[in-house]
Image (cartoon, rainbow, N blue to C red; front, side):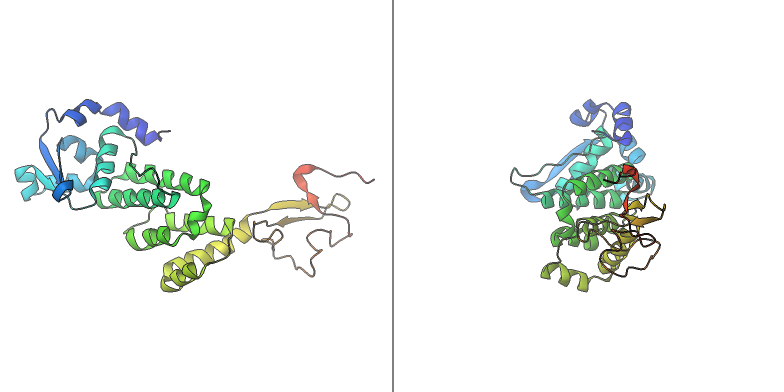
Amino acid sequence: MNTSQEQRLNMQIDPAYYRSGEHSDIVVCYGSGADARERLLHKIVLCSQSEFFKLMLAAPMKESRESVVHLHEDPELVDSALDFMYLGALTYELPDHASPADAAIRILGIYEIANQYMIDALLNATAIRFSDHLKHNPSLSANVAVLRTAYLDLTRDTHDLRKLIARAYNIWAPSISLEMEEFLLENKDAIADYFFEMAHERLELGSRRVCWHCNYQVNVCVTPADLTVENRYNTPVRNSDFLKLCPSCGNPLQLKTLGPMLDD
């Protein structure tokens, strides 16, 4: 499903010019050896979508004089960036046996290409794609290869993707692996995000419980790891029955949305 940015781009640009190179006024070269690629493109498209190309081609540089640009990033990621600028679609190819982690790493790679080429619409679309992918694969939040890409390869994280990963980990709440522990100990930004989100989730996730006998109410936080953890109002917890029974009258606390349960 296309984002609003993708739909807007699709309406503006005829894909035929991208595929044919007709009326091209710039050559973009990237890759090396057997993987070398050359594309006949259009300055107006590149400059309208990318601040990087806009600044480069407006300056008195070799690229602007000769209308030839050499890019040195991963050619697959460059293809994704060019596809998006022309077609408005976030595209990438993966092997048939690719894992969810492989897809996450590729999406983060495209996000970084968007960082480098300063393509705001691609940053937004990639952030949405990564968020959706993480929702369907929360175990990626404990995948060290994904974490290394997010924390070591991204030059900027304007969409807080790292915090999104940490939040997913604390909602999913698996036991921490030795490899994960070692990564966190080596990376102060990661450990700060993970501990912040751990505290945040315990404060924000939850449901309101009510005693229908005396109208005592309390917010109870719920996570997969600990089904009854402390609430945001720091109500004292004296024993394991506290969050099940009303501390005022001793009757059961129930979900407010369910309504009162009639006595037998």
